[in-house]
Image (cartoon, rainbow, N blue to C red; front, side, top):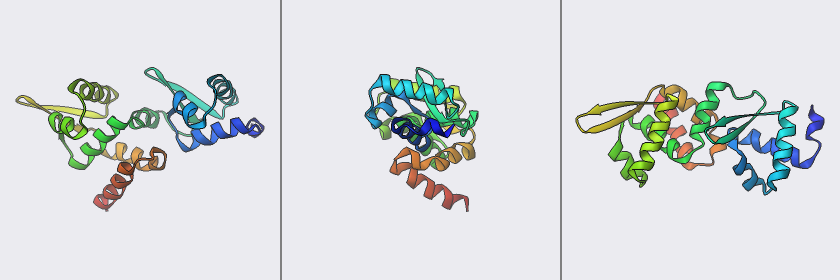
Length: 174
């Protein structure tokens, strides 16, 4: 199977997906600066050979190295690849509970955008919601699991926030 990586483009694609598991098609295309047809051809080839695997995440097709990332990790990793859900998760992990209004003012996004992301996170099973009079509060259902995903794959996020979170989380857990 390793002969499948003899071509430079395939090797570049494989290395990129290995470094950034859960990345999606357009992200690979943009960062590797490949034409879409060439990229799709090589991705399909690598999948047929079993070196890469993919799954649909809404409208996005996310790629992984073979079966290196298990099903549950893929679900969380796909969501944590998105900047806003990642920020929400980190804030909720560090504060144990966050309010809708607090998140909205910190993230500087519209109510509808925040509602969309919170709904997506609840539907995947990451967030729990608690209503208190007219305010809504959110917390992470399985803190250790979400923190494990962020820490395990932190080098693939290229996000200083994740690096700082990992340091703080590890200090808190010691």
